[in-house]
Image 1: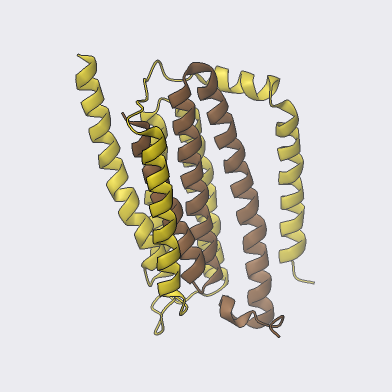
Image 2: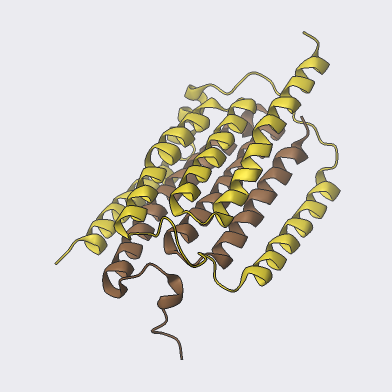
Amino acid sequence: MLLNQFLLLSAFLFGTGIYGVLTRKHAVLVLMSIELMLAAVNINLVAFGAFQGDEVAVVGQVFALFVLTIAAAEVGVGLAIVLLIYRNLHSADLDDVDSMKG
Amino acid sequence: MLAADIQVAQTAVFWILAIPMALSAIGVVTTKNVVHAALYLVVVLAGGAGQFILLGQEFVAWVQVLVYIGAVIVLFLFGIMLTRAPMHPKESLDNDLRWPGMVVAVFLVGVLGALLIDTFGDDKIELTAPTRTDEVTNEIFRTYIIPFEVVGILLLGALIGAVVLARKD
């Protein structure tokens, strides 16, 4: 297997996630796009670990596990914030969150 | 079996996993149904877990299945239900940044892809035996014990923060 096939797949997933973050209006969909980007980063870490061989393969995995943990925490807090926005504005549409707009 | 045969089989499995992943990723960011987006995300993450197994790193693959597909997607579905997201929306779920967003994404993937091809060219992953789980846990509890504890505190903070934010008072 080439290292590049994993890296290019992950770059594609990351780019798709960026597109989703920029274009989606619904807050939950934006969070999903962020998850897409984090999953892409994980593939990168694990592929580099496997590429470097035994010792480093474990380190790649450990970092991927840390990323997974942070992603879970981020989704929990993110969805709580989205719920709060929904409760206050009766909409989870990010274009409606414009009270800071000059 | 010859090493060359194994290489061919691994590459075939990679593409069998990668093509549905790429198509589902596009589905996540383009579908009009919010629940479908969550289900497309399941396909992407399960494909990612398959890639980890292909790379011989089973523990992180099963953690991905448990944490992402088991917990995070369920959280997303709860979020979709609680915010009463439209299942059959009349209007688009995208804002009017679709073309600038497309330009940014294509530019990013283009630059990243060119850099990666230039840097890593034909570098091959030589797979040895799969990593055993005890090696991973040894690494976490020896070298990375302090980051591990910090992540524990972070999760506690996130838990309390989410409860405080979401409760009604």
